Image (cartoon, rainbow, N blue to C red; front, side, top):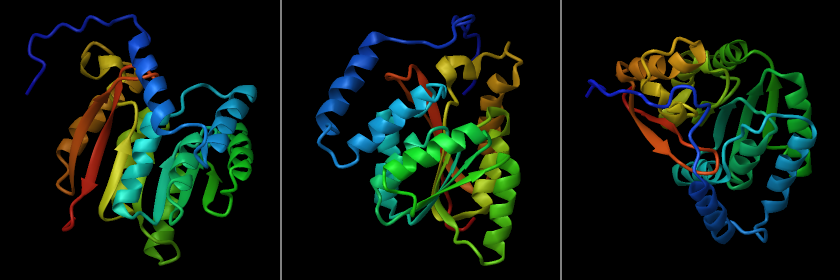
Length: 246
């Protein structure tokens, strides 16, 4: 199905937002994950400490983060990989909701790594979350080598939320390091609908189409785009499952 003659009307808008979406997220998370939950304090600390440290407010939303954590629980994931640590917020969600799981998370910015490690230590998860500082492609290629040499287990879940122009490269490396039936989530693909704006040429914007069209041709996976709205605006992720015969 193509976009046909659809005219994209959101040009010039940084993102689409709606106060109702934010209010619904606030109400539902307050009910379904209240401050009395065991990991609530660590998660709030990660947000607060990251803000004080000057990190951008671009972490996954609480609802999305918990959804990913629940996917890991359903799949029984024991080893997961995150590309793009930021302040460690989503990493804390994933690990704290899955006591059976060890998470490796990769971050390029040394300041972000320092903040994330402190937040993870505060959460009491330093023994299960490994933070690696370095270029995403370089680190993932090294991890792939370690897996091939039998020095590191394959991963059952991947969360890719880093430099967008490398999304397809990260995706392909993830598939090569994945267990059968592993799940891959790539964040910020819809980008307020700009995914289908053919007039955009910025690599950060065209990356979504390159990813979608590349994954569409990949016989190793089954995949779908799930559009989302919420406190982090209108966006959407690419979700993929590795076939058992890949």
